[in-house]
Image 1 (cartoon, rainbow, N blue to C red):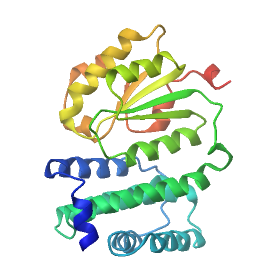
Image 2: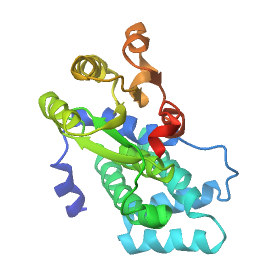
Image 3: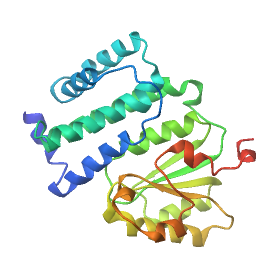
Image 4: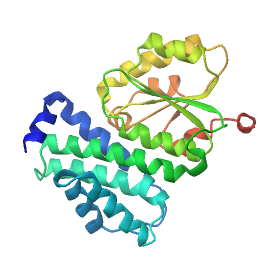
Length: 251
């Protein structure tokens, strides 16, 4: 457990709810595809995440693939389901805060590993429309945004992830790119006002009409009419967000 205690130093107790919100947000992106794994598979996988090395998780996923489970299911559904299960384990006192965060970090690495196979030739570069995905300052859990980025790529877009950027840096980024869609991810309702401020500043700086969306667990915890006046869409589904981009932007 010594390595777990060392990892704990990277987190403060105030980050606990944020960690779980970020984890549960991933599970909200489940598609309607038929599942080809069961609860036992998920729980065995989650147990290996916090008790064994990375090679064990890779072996378990490869066994699922051998059983006929597609990379699409692994990337879009299985890994998010595992994230939600880790959060539930913490709520049930089956895992500590430290173990959940270690699990989240390992899931993030696995997501990166399987993203390359999931995307195939689209992994290196997409010639599709540029999409800016923003995680507000001081948000530290990026797994949901990474998964969303992969789905955007799979659907032909070219996502740019902005994590830890100041408002000024985000505006500079937008001025130097031709983004066709701008998305903000929020996992904590306390960040809503910050997101609204960012969005308003972006809108004021835009020379052309660019669709803006907001998604994440944080939006399910508040009822803000202002969200509907500032953003063009409120959704955590990348496919729905991409519907805001016109067909000619893909050419």
